[in-house]
Image (tube, rainbow, N blue to C red; front, side, top):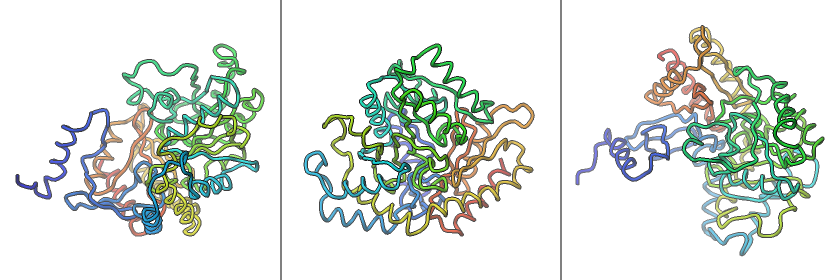
Length: 429
């Protein structure tokens, strides 16, 4: 059998993918990666791309950071699996200690490790129910909390996540997330919670309220400070636990180690994943020690939860974040991107809004006269950029937002090159 030429390798692999993989695993591009380094990747045909997606916010420390690679190699030389619930190991404990220390909140904390972001979210709900003896959970429209059934129940976006899966787990209630572009204010959100308590669910039955400080899939809408302060007051009044989902925002991307630090309030439980382990599957749930200890032994964990290789990578990531001042770099990169986008707004009238919290930046596209969302225009920009060698991600309930999730380690020259490609793509679209 003849090997496909370089120009046909992506197409040949795409044909194999379609034959072997279910269509439910949606794939954004037909670019099959052969190798990557920091903020650049090369496909099987040898074409180079600048990565402004980071595997959906996973690679704050970039592809194959040397310190992460070395930590993983060292752990492989020792052992790569035992299951922490059978024979524990120091790395797991050390990572929990460090997360307890760096997460917001001047109180005793404990941490449990898992594998995926949605595992951390599901276990946060389990802990909240055990600690309160209650069942109901409140989430926000536009939220994304994962693809398992409880994650889907919490998620506030039907297509493509909930479509076709039938009834969701009960006693999950949604209220509008405040977003200027959607015409929803903080007062609207708070009034919706008050109305929910009056018409649908007794607040004394609510175990937890879960929120993303910046909605990821929902469109990179930033929660206003007033919302967080008011939610903390509502939770305190009714004995509800506040869960903050930092799966996408955590680990420096917003110009703080955790986005919650922008708000001056404490969470009872914090979920994290994505950039936690530099590309290795690991998530964590950190919370008040008294709350975390509400679950009986055996109620938390998993065969691969806190895998030693991923834990070693995470410990290296924490060292890199501090050594390379990546929290501060996120803020600086975000400011550079905003400064680059501002003059483009006059030349691309479809840019309805540019919003940011630190390095989490997004552009929303709407018709300048009618205000109608423009998902097709957004997709065209993404496609043009990909052809030019720039990988972009979209998001939003209407699919009309481009979000920027470049590695925080991206070299200045590569970042500038990516911004130039972005400008060209916007103007060409």
